[in-house]
Length: 521
Image (cartoon, rainbow, N blue to C red; front, top):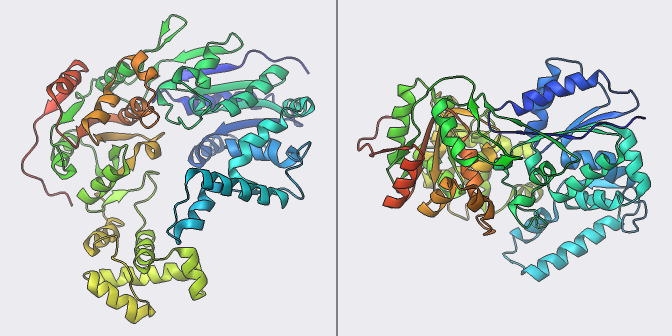
């Protein structure tokens, strides 16, 4: 088996067609894939996995030795499940993978008790729980990376893995942590695997890897500085109009070997200026200006979105739109059935597992109950919180214990939104990553958050190390870069003159709020 060339890193900004380019590379490489070896494509989300499979499936027949999946599914398939028990006395018996973390188990354990264990007690319980599961042959989701790393300490296993994997493609490489990078490095050093990684350092918003002490040491930047990797820059932005691309370039001009990264607008459309909406405190007062901007650019409701970092801001946006919103996957609106189920269970002071066990019901039975409630709301049998409680008692012989988390009017709006064509997408920034819309309104909770988003100095952005807010500069960049044609920015509190000047320096127009609110729904 001949040695392969240098691993390739493609650094590409938002809208560059990263996935499209990688799919082209995969199709070309498949011509040379040996029958007894694998091509592995690693992604970071299930939706990204689905996206790549669909793109490839439209162009070629997928061979059986092509694996496309998340990091955890890759590691479990190729390393953890087959090899983790070798030289590891902690894992006994037939190994089974449990797709949940110990944190999730703990949450369930203490959900109904009202107890909140301290840090030391929590770690002790997690350790005992993991040990107990391992002795029975179970492997938790949390252990995947650690066990893979431990397994590859065995030189023979490194050779086996390299012999098995002919091609390795890594999407969203900026989100790779040190443990996964160590596995990539193991394959590189064996010189039997062709490696292709693509990502954007400015979209790194996963700072949960405690081994990464500062931003400059994230694997994509570390690898780009290594002679063992060949780094190329894709500076094309195929998504956004010129005004948005120019604005984004304020935050992305990183230098790679004296080559400054600056995107170029591919579509050549000038576009309208990025706008700051001065209305504060209430998202309802921001919407007229945003909607006016959308309407003047012929942007339909389904191509409009509101993005925020904080979930409480997202909830305010949902309330301002009366629940008439789309889910972030672009495929469906907020499920009325799910919302009704959650409302019912919350008002009963229980959860789905406990409720179904107590009543001898299935999840499908609970869904049928939710549908009955929806019909009652539609026919106005349920009109308020009191009639909701009476209906639950008379129909299901259940007694409401807690106040319902949503007003009946809001639930009605969610039900209506399933057939309404005026719903828009609302989400936090993390869930919006990888998506794009014609028009985006990015809402900061306060001026501090807004200024972190607007910091255009690469050194200060990289050096920002407050654990609670270390990702904020890049979170703003991710939010801004989702927009194709219209980008509006807003803040839930009044901003100072210095922040207004910063916006002005970045080429952002500042609007005065519109007093009269238009008819939305």
